[in-house]
Image (tube, rainbow over all chains, first blue to last red; front, side, top):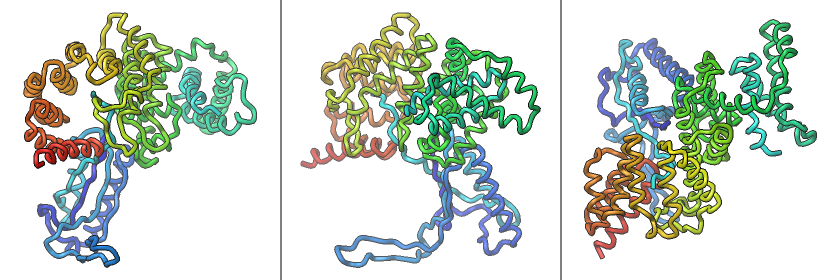
Length: 135
Length: 381
């Protein structure tokens, strides 16, 4: 089993096919979207593939060390051009193909007009403990 | 309170309940409850016959839960009719449970979880901790596995190759938290080998013992990797090595070579060398040839290429590497090593950097990055 991080971007990913901001959707479309996400999580919990997931606030700050006793330099909220992570989910799956399959399902969450958003999700494998030596 | 002893009794007790007519999931639940009860009661009142005690308590628990939803009389008649199991049956029951929990209808991850729970007697919480997933996730994985095997008949012999693969998967998971899966895999394989006379079971046990014997030398206190050639061989566990070699020799004497025996033979040749220079690379190459004759596995071909580089020189190793799929994990790292040995530090440093960027684990990435940095520093100076 390998763990993967599914990253959902507010900004920074290529544009979705059905690219309408959520505040332009009908309320029932928002509800349908949320329901889809909850069903998805429940389903992969039942298959033993769900590890964790959280939504993140759009408010972010960059922090940097700037010498002893001096305040860190901040740079936020994010300027328009910057990548912005909306949330993440960790899954633990048997194969890379299964990870792709689940990411595809998540990307098909309904959006404006009840149609799938077709948004891009970033899929990143976790670094693992070293496996048994092959020396 | 010897928890390992307690857990070693688990599979036979589940087996007895299943043979008496309990379905697998209910038997497994009842035995888990009996284990919890034993942890509570035994320190004050240790039983004369621990297994008999567990069978009695687990059976009572099973009946308690069965009464809730089924007719009472049939179950009670059955318990009256059933004689106490003898020692021979206990071994058979244990073996059948190994085969059931590794049934080919299960995914590897499910088989691993079910084996640790039903054969190993670990709680769901501890298995979840070992695999770094939430307890609810692991509970679902186990209950799905139990449903999958619910209809499998308990009396049919299973596939030994599947059982061995599951045990080796557990071994390879290493350890995290307070469950050492390496030790657990060795314990389960030892038990299997004690009750089931099969050369590949011995081969796998030998392989695990020989790998495990060298574990203390493989990482430094800070977690960084130590390459084989630099390991402090004084840290190797000579007792485990001796046992592994004995088990392997007995298996090889039966002249039915399998992949675990061949891998164990390679591990034994490493363990046998007092210094890295003394390693019998020629014989290691021969064992990899045997292994490739059994299973044409790309990892074995990669390892053979590295061994060939030691036996016949870096050029020979590089030529063997050239025939392998470029995307094969660790191929770039192997190429870096061989290029450095071949006197081409520039190429070696570049390849170490590439290998580090695609390394699957943090300690491995750090090790490869240090190699690249070491060579680059020398090239600049």
